[in-house]
Image: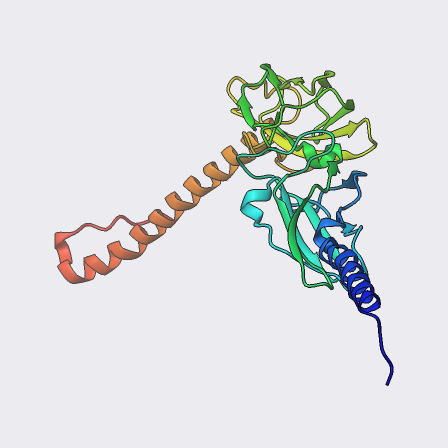
Length: 305
């Protein structure tokens, strides 16, 4: 029979207990993945532009970085909280757009939000919600949309029309150049602030359309139009071309206001003469008929030979 000394048994048990005591704290102290990783999107702003006819910008796409293999994510942000950003998941990327909507206005430079929340599910079963801050920088033609009010004036009147921005953000100093043209070739000037000055010619009764091009420092452009209507009051018809007041359209190629007036008078005179002739013919026809009915009661004049 093999005999084991009590001291040997005691030492072996103590060694095993000590080893387990060392291993257990190590296992219990392992960090969950949610405490190890910090997912994020690139801090580099992406440039977005105008989508014609839309209030939202073109899209920018961000990769969710800093996650281990096997981790998944879900966007839980609400667009009403992330303005001026609009967010959605597009395949494995975060799609972000700018939107012109109150109360948060788009501004020059990077725009972002601290409400873009994403839920991360890690392979070890841990989960967390992280906030990412994608940044979008609008081009100037998205940030601004200069507009002008259409106005009305009299022949010879000088008018000044200033622009305003549709999106309430004040027009900035990043405009390189304003250019304006009149559809009727009126004399017109635009200053460095976009204010248009023009004088309605004294010899015209029709208006003009104006086209304004705004060129920004980033190379983008905006185009807008407005109309100056003409009341036609006091127009000098003896010289120049006259047309329909306020329409911005001439009476017709080669036709002046004086010629139109002469033509109208001739037409009225011809109409009156025609009516008189028609009435005379009717009377000449009816009188013999009445004489036949009433006999000597009516004397019918006869044309002498």
